[in-house]
Length: 278
Length: 260
Ligand SMILES: Nc1ncnc2c1ncn2[C@@H]1O[C@H](COP(=O)(O)OP(=O)(O)OP(=O)(O)O)[C@@H](O)[C@H]1O
Ligand SMILES: [Mg+2]
Image (cartoon, rainbow over all chains, first blue to last red):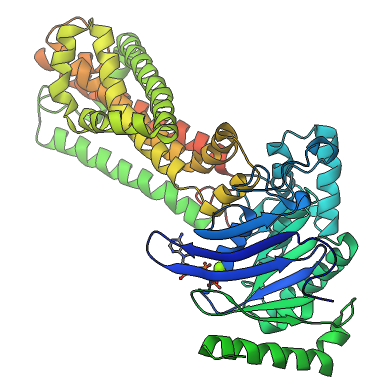
């Protein structure tokens, strides 16, 4: 169910090290593979390098040493060291980029309304107008914001802003969706709601999702696989499969099975934080 | 609603009190008009000299508007150039600062020597108004949310896309704040240059009228011209504030009215 299998990895990191100019070693010996269509969570204490890893995967930052390889379907457009450019003919695919990123904050442009924010990735890629309108409407409908297309971000609630941010990430129909603690700032009710929405979206679209969180409960509810990281410098401490079947709903959230997985993952996280061995 | 009445009513009340006190003082102490004219006389002069003062006002306003427009275009363009090409910033920024910190009153006479008078006045208006636009625009362009920059990066936006779609809109509040300051300053620059040129006697703007009336001890006209200058400054301020409000009203904290 987890680990390797299912053909080539979407993205594959080998002994990646990231040392910042300040001398901070954020990642060291970080090995990580993500399989196509998989929902995998990166779980670890604050400051362990989760965001750093995600930025490297997005091609927004480069590793100090080690290798990062993307499969052709998910390479960052013109990425820093993408090895997958032999597969050209990008015109058959309307996506300007095969990777999308959802930040911890909604990161919307306050001067643009929701539709304009969601439209941005397509506009930057010079996609033609006819295609843009349809794609934007579809993305807004998926996250339940169709009625708010003309609203400005400040007129939305925190959860709605986050959904707008997710719609913007989905509008390019990315192969790989990177999410950096997207729901961390939300209240529990909204968070559960968005977790449910997230899962139905994922089941519908079957894109690969890498989801960063420091919540054990959230990661168990969402993921097929949880990668627990050690405190700085970050590396993989444990790789735990959550083989519970989808769809997962409120029933799953209150089941003994769910509680059991949470216990296992929680124990791994405690050990990772304490620096012990599994 | 009540706050609004007070906001408008109280300043008007203060104005009325000051005018009454001024008038009473002038009458009570029998102050001659060439020392301090009463408010009534100033108003009468304003009406009597209306044509002359109006012509002068137009001259000063024309210079102010030209100086302001040049400062706006120049300041924004230079800030963009600084933002896009580091080397240009390194080369020219110190001189922009020097231009700013040198007192304009000291520069005006020099400009009057080297430039024809209308040009010198315009140059003064431009020099004082230019820096706030440059400084504010630079600040705005440099303080864009870094996650939004990363997002544009992720979607491989070109430099110009980043500038046009991200940096300029993000800097708009600061740019408008710079323009608001520049509006008032370009009037000051024009006045300073006119006053400096006053002794040369070639100009005909409002500030020149003030200097000229001063020599002739026509104090009521000095006051009338001063009144017009203040009014021009206030109108410029309100026009630019209105523009700023119009541009930002949908999204920026400074312009939105929070519904409770
Ligand atoms: N641009 C940077 N320059 C210097 N150090 C950085 C930079 N970005 C991150 N770091 C450091 O790298 C380490 C890992 O940071 P990172 O943001 O990846 O942590 P994280 O796991 O995402 O934490 P959190 O859960 O709090 O978001 C931290 O110690 C941080 O101080
Ligand atoms: Mg982080």
